[in-house]
Image 1 (cartoon, rainbow, N blue to C red):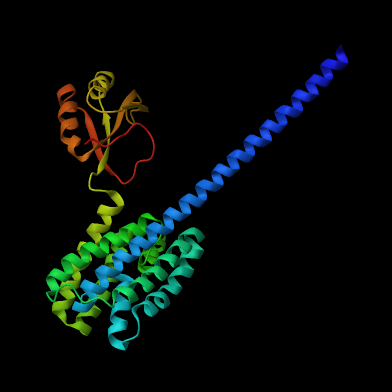
Image 2: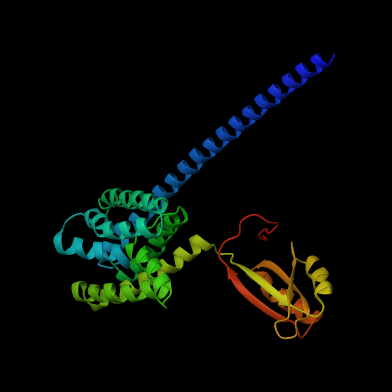
Length: 311
């Protein structure tokens, strides 16, 4: 009887081991399929972004001698001076920046950026065959900036980049008191000034307009039109405030803190809302506790949780 029980236990252990191996194999297959799917989606997004950006550049900006900032702007000026293909300069100018990115940022970013640069170079050669959409440089700056910004934003959402100056800015941000945006702006002032010497100062000013339009559209694509905000509230009535907020928004969290001066325990109310709800939340907070301390910060991305954008 005992021998039979031992054999049954051994068989059960073997069966459980086989089931465990099968489950592990199934999980590995699912992960592999997800990686393949994610890679295909990323490549498709890079291609669509490069195609859209090439239309903005080749049909609007470049024919009207209006440039973008960064390496793209340098490539446009070099093309004008030498009459060589735009893609040749886009690739060659980005090589040293890609090396820096590989050393300081990571391989995945570099691979995505190389793919994006090659795709934009190829798409630009195709888009170059089409006639320009307008001869008005101001219209070209506005609409070319919108289209180019959408394309670049899609590339950035896919984890790539077209502009080596952003790589320098990211690295410089870690070793200097200046932010990424300040470093990029400083570099682009020199590049846009160069456009003034090559194309004329009117075109340089149109290029500045295009640069700001592109930057805004990149923000729209990467962050979305419906911006979200994180609100932290220090109140003497945290539980009452939590109950009221829970009745009007989707989720509220209580964080346990301590007064830095008094040492008294504090309950901090935390929630994430969309742009349209900010004013309503402030009114609710002040109606419950007019002495509440409220901080509001823009949120660039949200993953998971119960937060849903209202329609």
